[in-house]
Length: 439
Image (tube, rainbow, N blue to C red; front, side, top):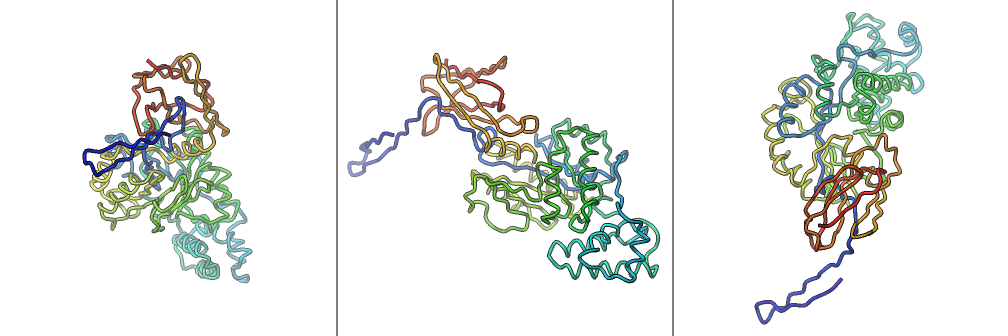
């Protein structure tokens, strides 16, 4: 580093400039793809029809990929449907007449609740699960006791009612989903039936997780068995531990040493966190004004470590807290105006990029007026296959740079910052030596 003192135009002012000298070849992995300032992932829950019919065309027009967490059991042709795995439900119903609900039998009774053969029992499962989420276990037990007492009294009509999230997902086919995936959108799991998973016993919980993933694998391919969102944004520890065994990435919670997570209800400013990365979840409802939504974009641009994860549900009257397609168009258009600073990518791709960056090593050397670069990754490269963006400083005399790896060649022009001349380029980890040659 050199310090220079220069006399300014005014005789009474002295200006100090710091000139940084960076060694040629110094290379870093940029925090975000393409050297952007922040990342945004657009996600939708439930796979309701208008997410695809109305919102997806807007994103396609603007060039934005999205992640759709789909309820697989409602899609026509799905192999795996909702069911109760356990004792005959009549045996469970009869037992409730003499044994009150407690910590030992609650999960079995709650898991069976939607499958008793009566309309209206599903809501009791959901309500009980909500109580478990907030630690109100005695209230959850009472809900089960009330449910089974009404079942024994014949208070429910025969039938089966699915929840509104699942109902809203009707109308989309696997053929359509395959087409959307080919367009660059991520299809991810939102389970088979959208249950309150904290109120499921282990065997039924695992069925919802594993078979939804198996359905997606069979209908698409293994690539899409990466991300999941467990319904109702649960962060129940037991649910999370089972889920991590099936899906590498969860929108619910994704503990990483380098990642701070702020869920949708968190009111803290993401800019106040010094973590390498901050996942900042925001969910717009029908009452969320557009200026507030736009401010989420501004906050992401203003900081260098924020990953804005947007969670949407209904669109144009179909689905929970439905937003209008006109509002989404305005919001996404504002996001597009910031594309020089934002990397908009699927939930899976951003997750992969962060993990790859934090688990990769860059090595450089110079040979015969070339800069040689290698990038090694310790994660499974069959799963973690996203190219990383490298920033290499080059001699100021280089007016053009040939980037060459194997049979791939590309010419790029250097840029400048306070440290000197540099180039940005893409490289896949564990793919051999890349050469930078000045011209």
